[in-house]
Amino acid sequence: MILESYTCDLCILQKRETVSHLFLRCNFAKACWQSIGVSVITTRSLQSIFRQIKDRLAVPFYMEIMILMTWSIWTVRNDWMFNGIDPAVQQCKRKFISEFSTLLHRARPTMIPNMTVWIQSLQ
Image (cartoon, one colour):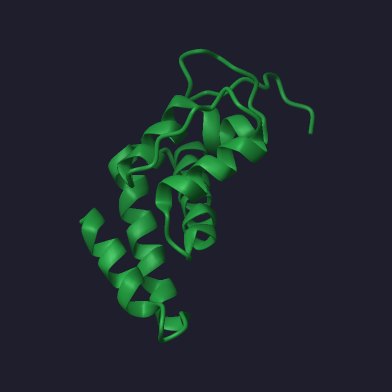
């Protein structure tokens, strides 16, 4: 896609907006992750960052958390870009909690108690 600029509009550092920057390295993305208790060293490789997230979460449903947080970051950014809604970390966290709560409807019955306790710990 040809754009006037490829820098991240949410980042005061004006870094190039790559996938890793958008979801993991941008100050906004890092703050969103921290809102659910995940902070990682983002100067490492993507594999290392994903491993850090997995280790910090220490739950068997870590992949669902990673997917839903990236989705939440994406939708909050899109709301800003296309709907003029200012991005906020709390908005991202609320969206994440809502999406995770919906996920509980399709989770394996054996996982639901642990998932419920985990999500309630964020509220």
